[in-house]
Amino acid sequence: MSGAGVWEAPGRVNLIGEHTDYNDGFVMPFALPRTVVATAARRDDGILRLRSADAHGGPVELPVAELAPGYGPGGWSDYPAGAVWALREAGYPVGGADIEYQSTVPAGAGLSSSAALSVVTALALTDLYGLGAERERMALLCRRAENEYVGAPTGIMDQMASACCVEGHVLHLDTRDLSRRLIPFDPAAHGLRLVVVDTRVKHAHSGGEYGKRRAGCEAAARALGVPALRDIAYAELPGALERLPDSGLRALVRHVVTENHRVERVAAALAAGEVRAVGPLLTEGHASLRDDFRVSCPELDLVAETALTAGALGARMTGGGFGGSVILLAEESGADAVLDRVVRAFTGAGYGEPGVFTAAVAGGARRVA
Image 1 (cartoon, rainbow, N blue to C red):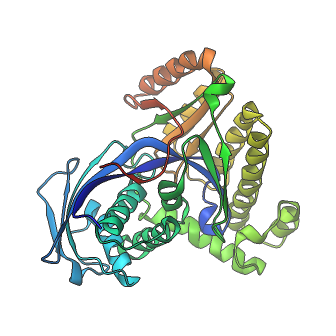
Image 2: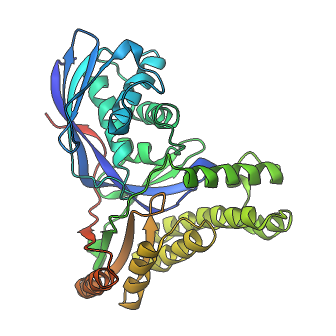
Image 3: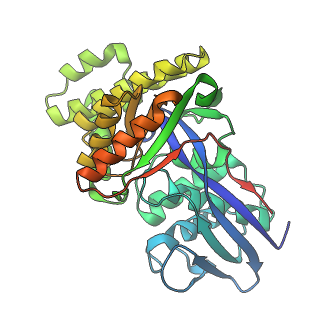
């Protein structure tokens, strides 16, 4: 047990497996070197004092014993407050703390800045109070915090990625039973570059459209008589679609089932060392998210289409959608030319300057001091 320290938790890129986690499906994220850093110290008066270097206004002070969904000023502070609430609800004796945050994870970019904020809080308090909570347990509690305290109907992928990823590997995760395996992933060793293009179009998971997609998936599962869409095998998809009269539900099912299949295909390609084969699967995934799940937007589509036209091996939106980022895979020798085309097309369309960075494959949450 220690009275003070510094911790960090990463954002993530989801290589493949979008909107499958809340359908008990498969995902394949990896951690970014962009993190939320928390400098934290215990306090003995039961007050949770939160300050963000990236937010306007002064610190937020909340009595730990009164934390509950709907309590507090809302906004960014709901995420760490929710993590503290979830720990206490699970029986962990968490008291007060002073926590100051700094982040290099772009907010609203589809890179899980909110999960990183929750996870770093849970990890800091676990260490400060000697709670001994395991990484998987922390991830589950942070998901509960987002679902019930914040009101964002997210799955488990983001929290598991931030808490459990390992440097140099993607995390192949079964979101039903949380079984996972680490698959080596080093594009540079194969002469490739994986790049994130942040459109700077903001989204909010607690907004209505994300929730509508989840509700639609749940309705489709009920209509098909299965616990979750994960239970529809790829070979069974045509028959399942025939049993659904509603075209909107058919489209949701088609995306989830084919996306789960794409995760397995990407896993097989990486295990075989065929990293270039991942490119076309990224592009397939984007088309499915755009046309069937309908969570893309003109900015994301422009980036993906321009990258492919310029010679990228594959490109797709990553994250919940309605804005955020695109990942693209390109030959290292041609990556700069691809990115130049993308930036010129994006700014030429009047969208402003996108954020662009190489997606290094980093490790999960940790104590740094």
